[in-house]
Amino acid sequence: MQRSCRCIKLSRAAYYQIPKGNDRDANIMAAINEIIDKHPRWGFWKTFKALRRKGHRWNHKRVYRVYCELRLNQKRRAKKRLPKRVKQPLLVPQLPNQIWSADFMSDTLYAGKRFRTFNVIDDFNRELLHVEIDTSITAKRLIRVFERIRLDRGLPDVLRTDNGPEFLSGEFVTWAEAAGMMIQYIQPGEPNQNAYIERFNRTYRNELLDLYMFRNLSEVREATYWWMIEYNEQRPHDSLGDLTPAEYMLKNSQNSTLQLST
Image 1 (tube, helix red, strand yellow):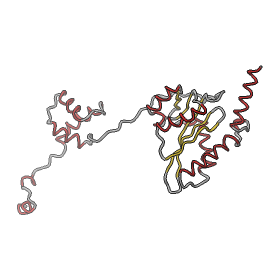
Image 2 (cartoon, rainbow, N blue to C red):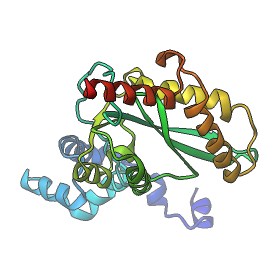
Image 3 (cartoon, rainbow, N blue to C red):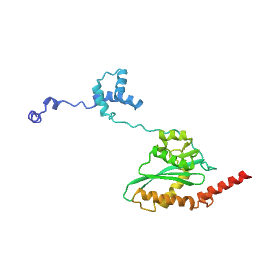
Image 4 (cartoon, rainbow, N blue to C red):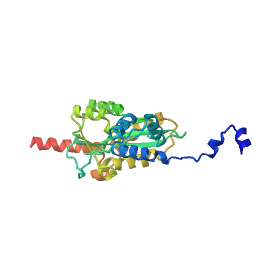
């Protein structure tokens, strides 16, 4: 054994010494975990100072070694908590621009590259107002989309959406408040509370996205443009009495004119 230790340059005292293992750090681990459980956002130094306030006199180097062994020095992402959403009935708007619905979809080009679409409809006559198509659509992009729609159509009183990060963005929420557009968030996991846009998404996918293989975004945009015209002006809707969105809007405006004249 003496010759073997000499060959690998290991002292015999170290060879015969019984490893202490991590049991000697068990108290430190328990103390650190107790603090982290109560304050998961605290870093090392705040945790170390809390240990000192509790009367523990361990050296900061030793505490930091145990802290790293527990992998607490890694960046921790706290789970985002959504505000409680109140269940609300699906309102049927009586006039245009009262309630719009918006949602995202995703699909894949022929080469495998993914892209997203941002769809906006008017719940009153199911009119498709806009489809934004790109590989990435941020909250700033949403603001630009609504500003473009605003020039021709104005903005709705209420925008019904899910709890996607783009809709929860502080920048988008601040802009919506300044524009006088209230955002109505549905309950998480309840897409039926946004039924109008969900029904449109199925139609858009069945009649266009699943029907063709697109090589690039330009083809998707062009096909969507022509399909949008057909959807609004030629495609009859069961929920509108077999009228198109354009015909239903015209009929409503004529009825309003008659009521005002009488």
